[in-house]
Image 1 (cartoon, rainbow, N blue to C red):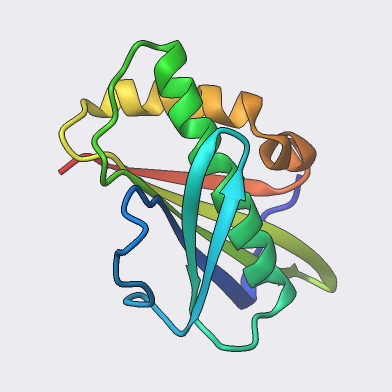
Image 2 (cartoon, rainbow, N blue to C red):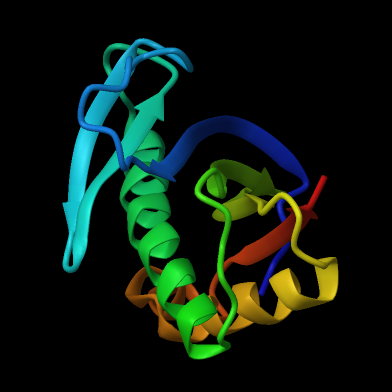
Amino acid sequence: MEKIEKVLTAGNSHATVNRDPHAQRGEFGVYDLKLTAPGVESLDYTGTEPHPRAEQLFAGAWSACYTTVFGMAAQLKNVTLPPDYSVDIQVNIGQTGAAWFLGAQFDIRVPGVEKEVVEKIAHLAHQICPYSKSVRGNIEIGTNIVTA
């Protein structure tokens, strides 16, 4: 697996589980979708531009899936997540020499849960998530855990 030397463009996403159907939307950007996943009432995905690029859509789909699976992984580990946990994913398109590659950076926010516990949940979620499985070993993925 090659590492990106120069990022050319990136697509960002922010996904949270929305438990309030009347919540104000659109605070993080101008591209705002309500997504669904099996067993989840709704997921909020917010991008950064009104006309998303492919890497933004991939980041949004991946974050919606991963956020749902992250909740399932927490249940499997008998961990109760705070209602405001979230997953931000940045999908990068970049170059190393003349070759082009994808890369991803995850920022997982789980306030009030020990970092080691969140890391275990995040790892299990990557083992379960179909998007994570599809890119395993093919792209560089970084993870940043925030518990404060």
